[in-house]
Length: 441
Image 1 (cartoon, helix red, strand yellow):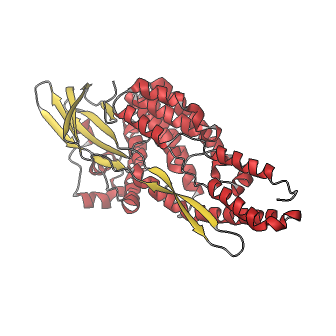
Image 2 (cartoon, rainbow, N blue to C red):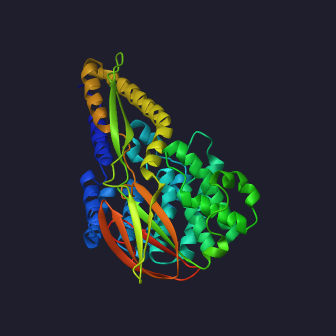
Image 3 (tube, rainbow, N blue to C red):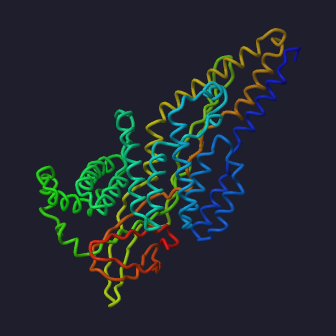
């Protein structure tokens, strides 16, 4: 092949290929999901730590998120919060700093860049940190996470135009409103309920997620309390008038909010196409696609059984469809992803052509082009990194009940599952987070 020093280049490409292959395997994520679904917490936590090195330095954020989620689902609140806080700080740093590695990514693939998280994933860091605090009964700390989340959503709203559908989170706003109400900040609670109502209208168009019926009741109830019914007159007319309970009525009752984390997050997979060119060899283009994993069941019915044996039941409604948010978020960026991938493919083809025609290597031009194109086919990979330990859906219901002690049962996948005993006082709100195996202790 002449005296042109191509072997260092080949070795470099192979090293880049090895670097691109770093990251936990699909089998690892399946094992982690199985352990968590079965309540095998020790095995789940050990699995994450044993595979920490496989994440690599460019997927440190995903290690923190998977570790946080495993600890969250296992009731290890202190460890979960430590990981969530570290993940939030790292995601913010990666999102705001200039990406100096872009030049390398242009000639290889995006795995050379640190994974900074999708926009919705960054919001869900604060949301699940809040849910972790709620599992531990720490509503004040959960409200702090909602305030951090509010700052992030305000940043999205100031940064993005209509090109991005996801720049608000309806369920997060609804949860924030409930927590403000627990804190007796009724004006703030009303504002969050109003925002959640507006965003759920957008959710219905973008993700086919309907308006939660309880949200309308909560919005009208607080609008009457803070003397802002004129702002929601149209909503009140559509709902048929005043809500069934006035705010004063709710203070004589307890409120139980049941949050169900259902299914698994979608998986990013790769689509690959080959485009013929004149004289440069085929263009290899790889780009990501979200693949939804259908949950085993969706309908959730929550029953509260009083000490007197009275049953109070309510069906959960879909509050957050993470599956569809992930798919839509990626679709919104697909044009930019493909344009970047095309530019990278063309740049690599030009580089291959220049190397093959350099100096004394012209006689081996066709062989070199073929060789480098084969290597390029292996190196070109779509970035399929994502927060796989998220649930696919979040269901919620809330019930106003007389003060007392209740046994909580949930019916899911036709199974009646006894959970925990909860005591609620008049004017008190109790949150129960159920992840498919057990509720918070």
